[in-house]
Image 1 (tube, rainbow, N blue to C red):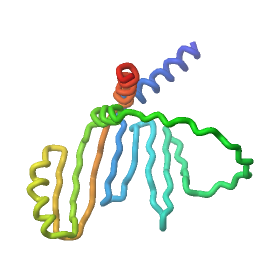
Image 2 (image 1 turned 30 degrees about the vertical axis):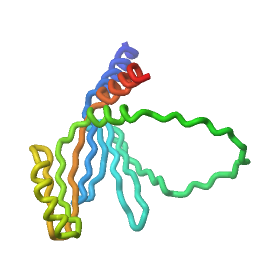
Image 3 (image 1 turned 135 degrees about the horizontal axis):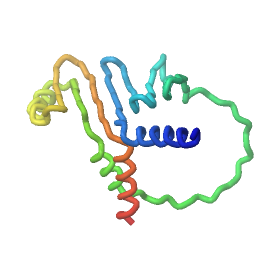
Image 4 (image 1 turned 180 degrees about the horizontal axis):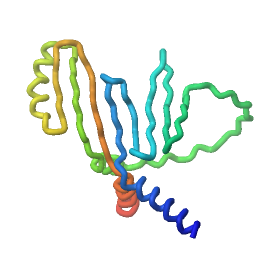
Length: 169
């Protein structure tokens, strides 16, 4: 009875991860940069002074920090000559299909190029691009910021990869 309960909980978590939306948020005004699976996982990118940054991870209810640029001292291993493997070029079609599976929830950009004539030329282009989810503003105030949320589901990414492996050989 306990094993059936454990198996069902694991399957529920697995299906939840596959069907819960994966969100990537970039907001330069609030300095928010994160990727999340609501209810399961969230990874925030935190910037410090200079070039340093940290990743704050929250998996279920456990939070911890990762410092990828922190130096780790390792014992030097003897260098062994390895033969170079030939690189296999992966087709661009997988990347394009993954981009097609991603949905833009909203994209708001406020752009100033610093060049007044170019800004004036970009205003009609920005007006043509705008729709319900995309708002593009060209300003003359030296203000640049982006607010972006894209979303997809794990099952979509897996299906794109499987289709690519089956039909692109």
